[in-house]
Length: 190
Image (tube, rainbow, N blue to C red; front, side):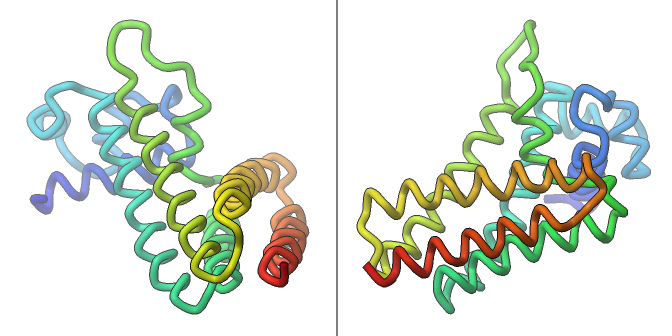
């Protein structure tokens, strides 16, 4: 990916995690990255949905890379890293930023075309769930339970990030961390 194109994608991911997709125009997304509007349309001829989809995939890939590395130490280490990443994001942004994947997922898809960004969000969530489920299975959790627990983890983390932003308080994330750790430890002992 070219440097200019990458800069636009990174800037778009950052703005979407702060303002959501509906709250951002292509001009806003280009401006946030410091790119000329013409360059944005050059790299993303299908417009906002294409750019948002790539921004979501970019954010998803960053989390996957981090999660993959941490899951080598086991599912609890992976969980702590996953939650720690979102904790840092929320605190570093003074509760102004969350997850761009969630931001896209909760918005109404466009009426005039394919929900490219929404499809990308679904892919990212599925990839995170798969990684967590695989780690849980590899560490002795029954396959059905591992899949359900992975879904619970992703849903709980995403919802908790939203709660923290709304309440301007990190304690919901800390509480969810403790409960999910206990649930994983219980599942590993069975």
